[in-house]
Length: 528
Image (cartoon, rainbow, N blue to C red; front, side, top):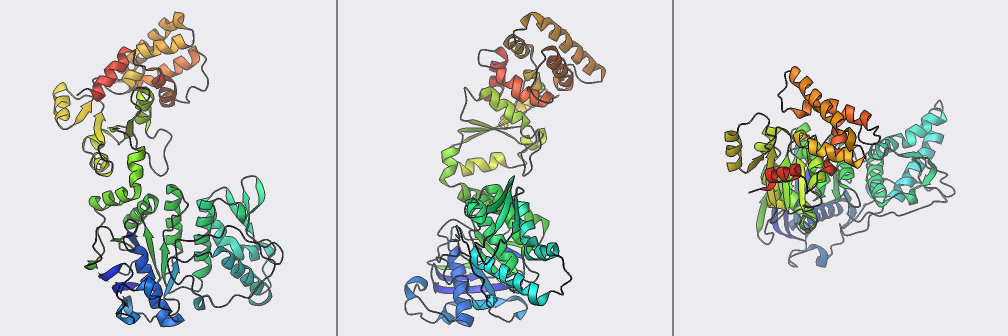
């Protein structure tokens, strides 16, 4: 079951809403701020389902904008791809008010046909489903044991069939959380987990985010066995979750959508939108975005799928951050070179940015450094940092900073015209491994008398680097040898496991305003 077009008139938020040209996609994302009509559309789906198959109790105060229109046929019209025949399983809806904090069962009851039971009638209704799904899993397991299975399965195979799919999905989200049993449904029946070294960890002890994600995953695993030709609707699935968990959950839900079915998600979270964008790029034609922002629903409105352009993502980011952006935002952002941080950050991600922040955190605490890729990435703003941040956070300043490398002063002057600052030295390591900084390190360890040994070793490391056809000012190429000498010479421990970590954790914090190298670096970046 997949929706092709929609017409909703004089209903809840809408005067006259049409949504046209919907492709038979697997996932539809409704994006927009609170109050933009996303939940109202889900209410329209619910009314349509009730009126067709469950009996509708029309609540005029809740549903109708115009008391003269009392017949739902005048308010809600849906068309489906391939002229699909509507049924009791055409829609399955979850409201944003999902909360089953704890439960324990002491008896087992036969569960009825889930298509005869409405999950919720209105999107403002409470929507606890975990206990009901536990009952269904336990009852299905009981029927499997005494009726449906052939008797040749082992106990391990039987348990795997009962909880294996939901256990694996949960473990992908929470690697230290393992669902291992339903307990005894006839006495204190509840979900039992292993969490780290703890055995028999009860469902009631899960965190809010763990319960919220477990609820949605469990519900999809259980219900998709029956709702296999269905439009699934989930309002704000991100509730109680961190940004990274939101993204991982959407991936799991996407993978669980039955073939031939469709999922609609109403969200304004960064994590969900980020994952939706990844899925959009990975699965062309299978992910569609509807933008509910900036529409006057007191007038006729026609929506169609939007192409996720840069402007669209900027609006989404602005909605997701809202006032929080101004609360936690720095006054200025400096986009420098270095590997950007991604979903799975490498050990040296944001290296340059972390070094700069260690240097300037004391004097410039409201300045944030962000690694934006290589020199070309930063100068051309390929990650769109310089374009996006001023639109998201009012009054913020954005600078771009690149290494000197082999750029001439003429090059640097041209860059400056475009708002791009260039270091006067070849790269950041030229400052970090400056003799003034290294002298401070030896002074810190009470070894100034031995500093001449380091000066000689540093000069030799640079000479060896030049012999390898590197430039005389290429301190970065000489840095590993200098780091190795210092670590051995001073017998250092816990100072960084390689020269980059050493630079971040040991050298950068030594650069202080009283130093010439500090003032030079500050002038390179901030002097106007």
